[in-house]
Structures are given as C-alpha cells and as structure tokens.
Length: 347
Image (tube, rainbow, N blue to C red; front, side, top):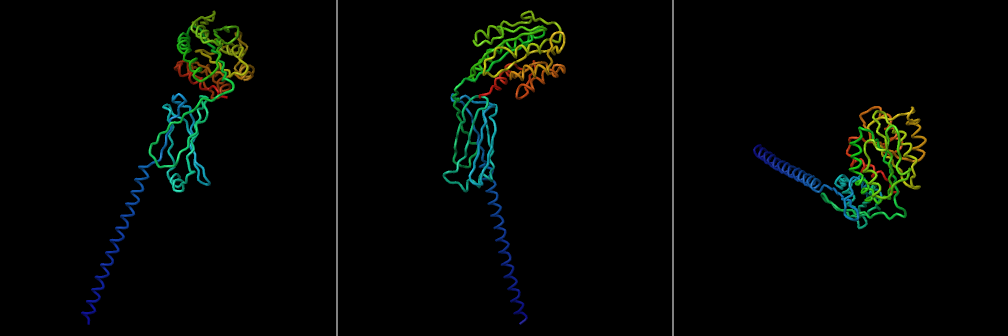
C-alpha cells in the first residue's frame, strides 16, 4: 500500500508539474504576443505619424513667404482641436497633429468629418483660401492653397516721405537709397498699392521738395531721388548734430492724400538738435503735436550704436509705428524697404 500510495502521489506530482509547465508556457506565449502587439502598435504609430504641410500661393502660383497665416481645425460635439501658424521663408507651414486625439476622431468618423483649413495672407491683400479634407493617417502630406487677390472698392493708398540727411558722412546712405528706390516702387506696385512719394533733405537746415506736394509718377520720383548728393540744396552740414527733428516736423505736414496711410522714412547717422538755436522742437513735442496728431508712422534708420541717437529716435519709432521698428544705417537697405512695405495695412 505504501508503494502504491507513494506511486500515486508521485504520479500526481508529476502530473502537477506538467500542468505547471503548460501554464508557464501559456503565460510566456501570451506575454510575447502582447509585447508583439504593443511593438506593432508603436511602429504603426511612428510610421504613420500624422503631419500635414501647406504651400500657400497667390493666383499666379507665386509663393507667399513669411506672411500667410494658416489655420487648421476640427470641431464636432466635444471633439475639437486647432492649430495656427505662418508660412516660413520657403512658403511652407507644417502641422504636427495630436495623434491620440486624431485617432479618436478617425475611429468615430463619418462622411461629415473633415479638417477645415483657412489661409489668409496678412501682408498681401488676399481673400481667405478654404480647403476641406477627409480624415486619413498620412505621413508628410503636402497640399497647395491658392489665394485670390481681394477685390477692393478703393485702392490701398500709402504716402511715403523720405527724410534724408545729406551731410558729408551720408554718401553711403544716399547711394543705398538711389540703388534701391526702383525696387521699393516695384514692391509697392506688386502689392497693389497706390503710392505717392515726397522728399525732404536736411543738414542744419531743411529743404522740402516740390513745395510739399508728393510725386505720383514713377519717372519723377526716380529722377528726383537719383539727383540727390552730399550737400544737396545747400545742406552740407559739416558738424553734428543736424536738424532731424525739424525735418521730420516739416515732412509731417506735407500735402498727403486725404485717406492715405502716411509713412516717414528718416535716414541719418547723427543725433539731432533739440530745443536750441537751430530748432525749437523736442522729441516729445514733435511726437505729440505733429506725428500723433497727423497719424504719421516714422521708421528711423540711424546709427543704433550711438546712445544719443537711440534716445531720440527709438521713442519716435515706438510711439508712431505699430511694431516700434527702427533700423541701423548699415543694414541692407533692400531688406529695410521690404519690411516697411510689409507694414501697409490692407484695410
């Protein structure tokens, strides 16, 4: 009986071990399968990373760089997300979509579920471009958005006055203006701007061209700018400071068109006389009584390394133009004028 009992017990023990090994094998296989499933899901999630990028173009297929705002959004019941950003210097705007949220929306999609994309070029006066997409998981999808020029009842009016220091040290600044004035005009024309341009030169004194009237013909503008030279109209200077504040004051009351946006671009490399025998103007009185009163935006171009100039010209920029923009006299002038043109409002 003992042997028999011992045999039976031993057999049961062996049978238990077999069952135990089978359970271990089953658990091992199950763990491997789960790990494989997670690995596959991770790979799919990585491989099908959802991103979408847009190239924004005008009706002539020209890229709109640095200035088109693209908004992408989805909203249905409690499910929603949105993104907004500008095109980069190459015309691209790229959106990385929230994967988990996007998957939840995809799983619950129906024929009405679409991405909405709106594009508006802020710098150029274009209409919104509307695009709708069906949902899908894609990688690096690119799509073009075309914007039509906005039809306006009235032209965009912008008046500019160049206020130019023509003293001896300004030969380089005058040359930059001459070399880029045609490009400046072409930029305005490309933006659909109806422009008028005035010219004021100064040293210790001030000379206003054309009796304060603005030039509207391209040939007249080019001819007048291209004749500028050091010592023009007797404004040779020869010392520092000069009469920048007086020149800006005179430029601010020129014969601007009634509904135009008004811009002054002042070029100098010296500080200004202030409330002395040359001029009675101070920075504060100039801003209050001439610039703010006449809704004038001033963009100073000066030697930004000189503290006296910074104290005079930066407050003028900060209180008259929306971005408080100013530039250094050594900056590339073509980039300066492009930036200033970009400040023209569409409305």
